[in-house]
Length: 341
Image (cartoon, rainbow, N blue to C red; front, top):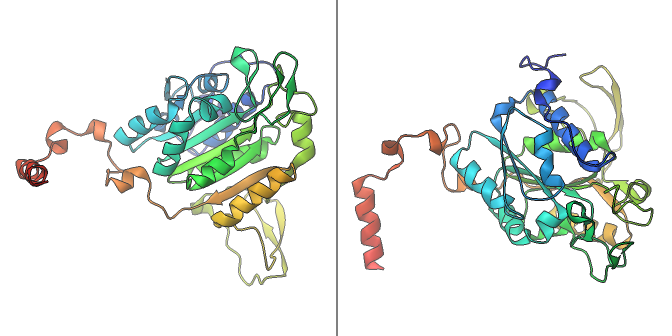
């Protein structure tokens, strides 16, 4: 069935996956396909980025009509920053892994967060280097025992805590086994004007899926705690309701004809409260809870292109030399300021 721009879901697919059957990364790729199809996004308006690892193979499995770049290990953020700075008309999806991001790529990860580059940054987090036979990654929990690697003696890096500490403007976590939540979070991330980080627990069925592992299907299903039921509704289709006081219940009809019962509480989780978000993450870690949902969002901070006054309606790489080059007065003024300094 075609979407509103006349494309079939098959127009958003990529090559057949070569990952292990049951790998959570395949679910993530499928939900990227579904999200872009349902949002009526032209595939050519998206550019894909990745580093190195099992997760970084995934861009081949979705949006085969989109351009993409497979960068060096841990270098996806700087590659994406350069490309999206040059062409602000494109939306970027960066696919990374826990090793690619929290080990060799940690420096670049922290800087792309604070610069608030408009990029959907997905970390397919399985706690191991699956492509190189299952070594521990920096997100593996302390005490984890794997047959081929022994026992992990180190405390883990928490992707969400690192994102909050770096002032990221959109922070979410999900579990690959919860496909619908993954899709809705990707939709919201694609519509955020800034850096959207999605830490998605994606079990490695080959090296790290025994019941006690914090990155396994079994542990994640047992420990998952949702912050809220999350659905993304595009702004132009927003459903508005009247006379809904705190402490009351109201039934709302959704776009597909289904009914939803809402209860407005006097106090509820506030994803715009950064301090609360950090406290909630730390509590969940202490209690060994897999916290999922939209954990934090700041829609008011300027993104990197806006900070540098880069046009959003026309790409720098499509402008003429005369349009981009500073005029002589500006060059003279700059030279004078440098000389005076």
